[in-house]
Image (tube, rainbow, N blue to C red; front, side, top):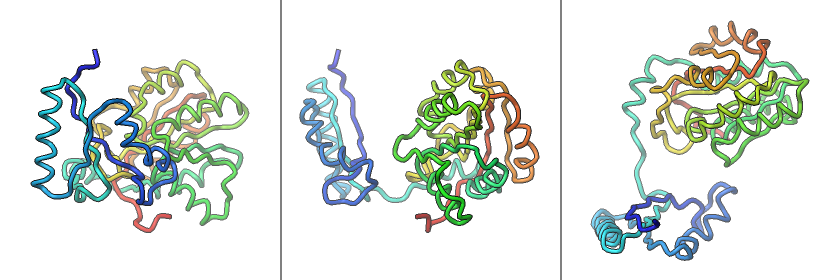
Length: 268
């Protein structure tokens, strides 16, 4: 059953000697040793075209001849920047940035509201906006490194803090990664959970590769999973106009905010 000739392309996060996010450090140290322990043949992808081609030929030959997976480890900087032309075309009509939408949301939330933000740029922007306004960080949980899990963390908080609104700030890539979370939230039915999804059709925090975010109907998925109220906004005035209703409706409530792909280069 395990004799599957599959080619595995693995980004080597936090490879020894390379500085990376702290949550990757431990796995980075043992990535190659872990593959060896599992009996999966592996090589590091060279950074020249001819050597990379030879590496791929060896990998494909090995998978076919031995009916085994073969892992190719890709070091940081091996590939050039990604051009997201297709998603940029769909993004062209959108004017609102995530940081602008987030700043608007924070001014509309009540002082006791809890915020759980997804990994990547969203949490970094939330942190900096709180710093800028000197509002403190005691109400925020930054889901650093656990992609796709912020909605389940928010669900746990909402069930434990039933007298307070809990806002989950999600991303399209993260939500798609654990789409089953919608069904769990809908079936649990916490009236105080507000699930907000920033949709820019891209994995912006890790290079801008496109997601299926613009191809699927998130509000329809949420409604089908049992969310009580679902909304979509794509502009600052539209967002401000419907937020109070979104905030006061019995939850779980869902709000998709369609945004353009953009973030500041100087984010901490």
